[in-house]
Image (cartoon, rainbow, N blue to C red; front, side):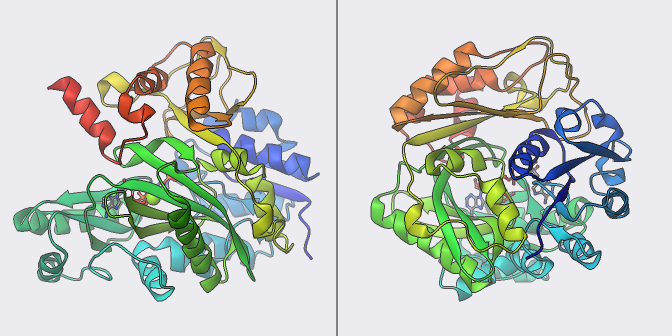
Length: 452
Ligand code: ADP
Ligand code: ADP
Ligand code: MG
């Protein structure tokens, strides 16, 4: 068994800090890779060692294969953790890491290529017997193909970039003319944004819930850690997540979680991953939409209800250990909620606005967890995404978690820039939130109702 002694973290922000914390507890020496813009970061302060990998723009640092590999050699690490975003779902890079004789903390390049590419993952899911959204069953070659497929699927349809992610590369077409216009521009945009112009079509499921299952595999077997409900989104990006999904009955929950494990087993999955579904509360049907072959932003709510450390678990399976948990030992308890603290102005359509944090006081007390890289005086660089931290609460039930979130938000003080925090206070006053009666476009409706 190859054990990991020195780990290079090729990410930034809160996830770099999270990985450092997990690795330190495992007795692993941590090395933080950082760009010129992140010299003052908390990750650099907390890691045992750090290494500069280039200029602020991600292409020159966090996305630069050569620079990252050179840093790994220079620091004589034996493993690399990619976090989320950046290189985490880049099969070519994962292969280069393995070719350099290093451990990649994540599934191997073949699995990333197969499950990280959305159109291909849908085929794999179908083959494993997992229900998928009615769609084009593969990439659209020509506009005519797209029109023919949409006639069978039924409008409205989504045009989705196969290499998309983070809510980007998705557009809606409500009729044929929008589809004809949309396909070509979606292909061009996907080529520019992801270096891959492949797009496919999917039926738009209205008023759906986004429910996802956390899985962990060791290449031989796989387990699940139950599900998360991430239906509160803006621009198809999650901003408030809960575990478990209170909308599911026990039987549906079991089927859903089992199907995710089956899918993971069918590809010999090794690592942490998330199988994402849309759930239609009116019919009780669920459909696979994609798999994320990495750790996700919202993993802490699963850790809170299951009492596990997913980052440590993924490190352990990466170094060849068998699954550290048996399915019957994973017992969820209580209810957890995470809200994403982003440097964005909720009153201006969530426009990102970097700046410097003036005063900062984090909430504390029972059931409150903060995953963040922020500190008073921290200057948020304008080059990366706007998330500066996550507030996670746990309580024995959903009402308790809502009350705790309310209490924690009232303690939290963060000045100097606009954040999403006031928006969460507003969400807490909404009956639909309190009654668990929202869906993936509910926030958009809420915002429209206010502006009209
Ligand atoms: P999660 O479910 O973990 O929230 P997201 O899809 O929101 O996953 O992505 C997590 C992070 O990775 C976000 O910062 C997001 O912007 C980034 N990301 C994910 N996929 C891509 C991609 N294909 N291109 C650019 N950024 C991505
Ligand atoms: P990404 O890789 O960007 O995360 P996903 O395929 O996971 O893309 O979709 C992101 C979000 O877009 C989903 O959480 C959901 O809100 C919405 N969405 C995706 N597919 C559909 C669909 N077929 N019908 C309705 N909404 C969808
Ligand atoms: Mg997704």
